[in-house]
Image 1 (cartoon, rainbow, N blue to C red):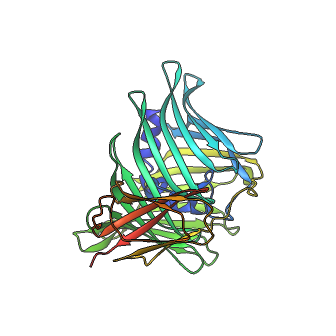
Image 2 (tube, one colour):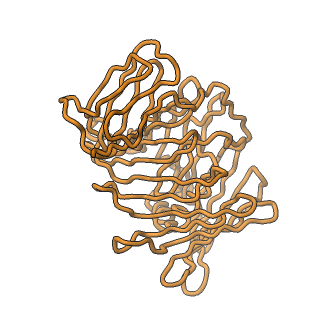
Image 3 (cartoon, one colour):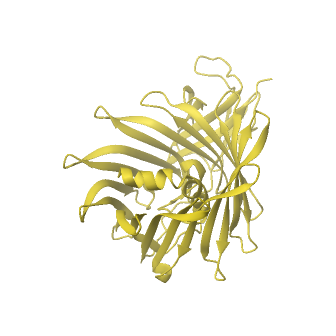
Length: 403
């Protein structure tokens, strides 16, 4: 396993962590799309694929391609991924070292993910991820680590949308205690709903710019260039890295070229793609540019299974809750698009994840005076309102500006 991390996680920083993440904005990874910095974006409608991964094999270059690790995928009778098994090649045999299990609700939405490691001849639970939805859209994700035989939260990710497009993500991090805000992500799209800019801010008070991703597209709407800029010296963005995409005449991806900016753009690494099995097999080779030549580092071969994904059970992604005005300075009004049949609980959290107030809503429209549970007016800042009850499980973001 250490060999794999040395070859993949470290050696692939520029291309795999940056360029492939942007490429996967148009591909499914079991219901979620991988984005920069390892943060996952909820699946957008119409992006289902009928070829699902079967076996992924990883090779290292030692003068020849040497078996390293492989990932086996297991599906249930509804073609849903229920488990992946990671194995290392050691002394001529494949040895288990990690397993990831997936569970779903009645509509096929992935609600929980468990990660196990094979230690001392036993499968030991190590990580867990819980996922909540509003309709078909992800509301939040909570990551846990197994510490002293108990699940302790280590990361929390909250999403906000405009229609079906994610426009804001808040990342909270910690180590078994209170989670602290870490990053805020702001997404910008063009008139074709393609992401053209991602701004990442440090979650300080006030938030400070940290990094920016710029996306350009070909005439055929394929990714052309992803440029990454760092916020330097507290006053401007400067070029840092970029990834250039090349395609063949059939619009199949042929190359991802990674470059770093050092006063000029310098080649650093690349991924070379081929399709020996048509739609049933994809291969890419990772190379690093060193001593004026391209050096083989690793190779990945992925085979696919033909499956059909059903979505008939998925509820509408249209929200039924509106906050106005937002930003707000005096009285916030909460309005439901449909008549309430019972009661709904609204919990108000600050940007640190602390519960500030809770209200029981029984009317279609509710006015909140922006006071906490002790009757004190809340200070300016970003707040999150969580609505639960009557089948609701939705979170909305509020910007409070006290005059």
